[in-house]
Length: 328
Ligand SMILES: N=C(N)NCCCC(=O)O
Ligand SMILES: [Zn+2]
Ligand SMILES: [Zn+2]
Image (cartoon, rainbow, N blue to C red):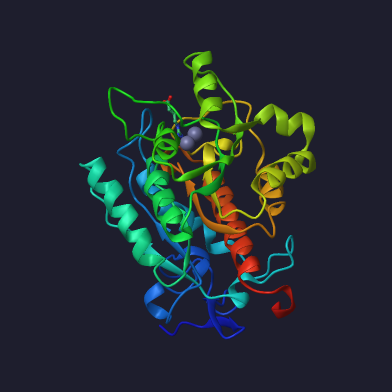
């Protein structure tokens, strides 16, 4: 079948949903071309079907394809930021990394190497998880490409700075402690956003503070509001290279039931999208959306939320990769 695509700005865009119904054909993110259909991509969306690091419900290995399926309804113009991201830059779907489900250390190596390969000529990655374990190798690759430790905004119900689970160092609850230990995070500019729920003890928070993390809890977002939160986050990040990691369980289970470790009292998808849009202009070098577990989803709620989050992350990257005058 002929692929009728939207083109603009010299870039190959998504399949034209006014001519080929959006539910037809195999899914790529936002119906974008595959990476092998373009010369190079400025931004690539890549999946990591891996969930061997989870402590509770499994199933995030299916998250990437669930997000792709739910992304069929995305449209090419993002009015919230007044940007047509797929016209501004070349965006493509790089498919899935082939990671070993039986060997976590090998899987981490594979993710790191694939991320380095994909970013070798300046491509920026938005990664679809997969469980949160994969943020560690993605941050390693981001720091290597940035040539320095990176700032990070971590949207999550959880701290993910715990030490070990059952003696295991590499799990979805421990990536950011490892990242601090490895010196790949700029500890002057790292914050959790949306945390809530019971912890193992007050020491979890003491350790986390010692590592340098700032915390904007889910309650803070509710009580202070998005604008105040954005101002604080931006002040901390400045112009440092920034990595954004979005664990979809940052959303309330009402907005994102399809995840492995849900916690009550989360932020709304509107709040999350508004905070992300507030990051406009920052030097976003990499991002992930993780912990989407479709087996627990209903009516594609979690897939739709995650696909919109990924779309706004792609838009933020497209926005900073080109001067505003080149838009539309
Ligand atoms: N990264 C996510 N989603 N969850 C971490 C939860 C770790 C725990 O079971 O205590
Ligand atoms: Zn979480
Ligand atoms: Zn997490």
